[in-house]
Length: 213
Length: 213
Image 1 (cartoon, chains in turn red, brown):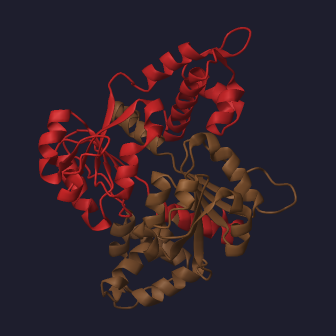
Image 2 (image 1 turned 135 degrees about the vertical axis):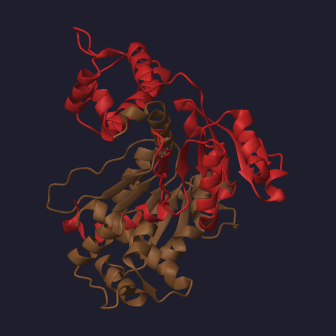
Image 3 (image 1 turned 90 degrees about the vertical axis):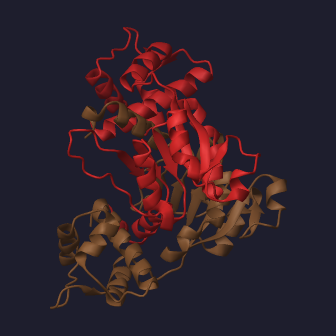
């Protein structure tokens, strides 16, 4: 499945969990279309590609859909992540409630500042950076969020990957990219969220609407 | 220019400002390629499309490049934004230093909670939500960042657009999309940053590397 379809499937999955949480039992393609920002035709096409078929009277059982999609998305294992860099953005992510409906859990934070890691008011344990390698192994995490200052981002990514982390979500303005691999191993997965860049693009598109594509 | 190219140009622009800040005067295509995560060939192709030519001895003058790209990106006006919803993520964005090198400035925050808007320790003024329309007009901003809880996101976007805001960066897990317009006016520009969704995708791509595209 291509990455656009993956984004849509993940959105369907999120929407289904929310709909179930408010007591619904059945859902229609157009409900999921609204939630994912696509047309009902695309939802039906995606489901048909995944060999998910609706009922004769129309609609899908939410519980059944969640189970099937969760198998497709490989939702067996717990989705634990660590936050490296516990400044304002890192702290916000440690407290972020939006991960729960997706089964994602921040299990630890890391920081170089003793004022930060000796503070016990964090919602999850925060360790000194010197314990990164040890704790990555002990916790068995393989995904890390980077919220360190720009100047430390590249080094932090390298340390995470060497410690065994395979996936990185990078909030620093530096664009990180996975190194090519030779031995047939899958390369690391790195996603970059660049907040300033998103705003830049918005300003640009507002200024030159005719150049939008 | 298509949106991939826009992203690259914006990255070149950011990198150039940083290189100038550390005292460099000249830059080569491969420097910018590294900064933007592309190949030097792509940098040269982009520049040739924009009719930016290097010097005979190779390389480009940084000051000259910044000026040309800033004209292309329409960097005349101040890039002021407001933050709507001053919880942890909103506060982190009000304090975020990563906007400065791009000339982006958070000029105000808005919140419904009197405890939040009566607190004077914020780095920018925070107003009650009831003053949103008045302040959007007074400040002349046309871009807003939405960091309200999921349940309030859609209403907040609607209010912002009605108040005259034309661009939105949405951090809530709800996918917001611009309404189609009829009268020939350009539609609003909405970008969604969905942190949980990014993590979901990372977990998925790690689990099924063969399905990556």
